[in-house]
Image 1 (tube, rainbow, N blue to C red):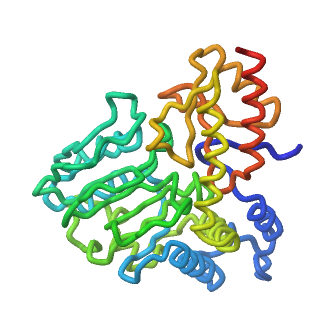
Image 2: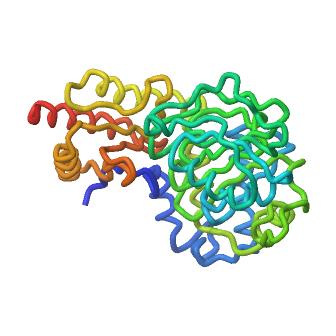
Length: 360
């Protein structure tokens, strides 16, 4: 069967080149006579895999030397707890609520201390990023938290809140590696990799050295202490070894394309094809305020649940998969991550035009 264009929000499309390379190495990785899936995480071969993955990610994102890179488990959802457990020293934190994922992070943080919601876009179904000017950052807050790109609602922070001397924490699960990032503006960045970087099972954490201490909230499990993982170079326990191996291949694939500046240009071009069509369509409509649109996740609707369902069903028959919107918002959503080829976006728009002609 031919490969489909997979618009899933995650687990999501991976570069075909990476999948083919992994397939060739499935029985014998680099002359070891075994698969990476079978390999000891203490072996020289795997130490090289994880070491190269870290080096390549550092090069791609220009990560400063005073930041540590971790490859952990538990996904972004575990970071919702791990961040306050390690960083909520005063038991106070400021959050900006821009969608389902920041909402979940807020609920989790409330288990550990007081959460101040500085701004929210919940009043308009998270269809915009709130005004960040004049935010009243709490004097006693340990950090300010944002979800940089909301996968479900399709919004993105195109500018950052002014946090003064407070640490900025960002969940970048759905847009890490989509464009250059100034890591030095953040105290900690994390990303569940299954959207834009690799297969489900790995979370990347980039944390500034001065935030890595033994001073964590009482009752924090050993496995949820950043210092333990830093001291053990992400090998305190058996890591998600095969997932890290695939992430490493994706890092090399991005490097080969020309790095994050090139990736940003490609992503903006892909997103423009879809948004330009949505802005001119009589049937389909984007749901996000223009200035806050994500270039990774594009939600849209027809205005009729019946037509939405028909569109999703018919799209599937022509190899356009996973276009159904998240269960909390309905409609459709096209996730056009790094590995989605421009041909996939063009085919989607072509099908949307045909569907519009037939159904308006």
